[in-house]
Image (cartoon, rainbow, N blue to C red):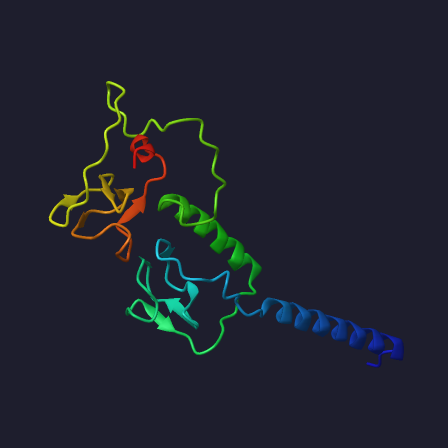
Length: 187
């Protein structure tokens, strides 16, 4: 069975085009991760397999967790080299997870532009229209989710049950800063 010469050249040409396209796709897919886009954020949830950059090193999450610092805890594996972040479908999936997780844990995901304030905040007003300033934070008191306390001239809201954790000082965070409250004008 003999093929004419032009058929053989056509097959070789198609093979070369196929291999050129495959290597171009592979080289486009194998892109190292960007350290700035992969920074570790304490308030974000990290599922198993998530890669972050922290203090000059790359880490991979072993299991789902939040606020556990890479390089200090067992939940992270230090990587020997820069990981591959060139998988477009994975990047899109991760972006969706980050946005969903950010919304679920108080905005730890993508930044959302703030709306301009229309006037004094209604938060903290009692039934009589009077502003109730939260009590000062106390080390000996237990706080439930949603509890408010003042500390350092600011108002803080407990985002987890907490006992003795100073606002703004613990990881994973137990408190978030309150930006709108009627008592903030008086502080």
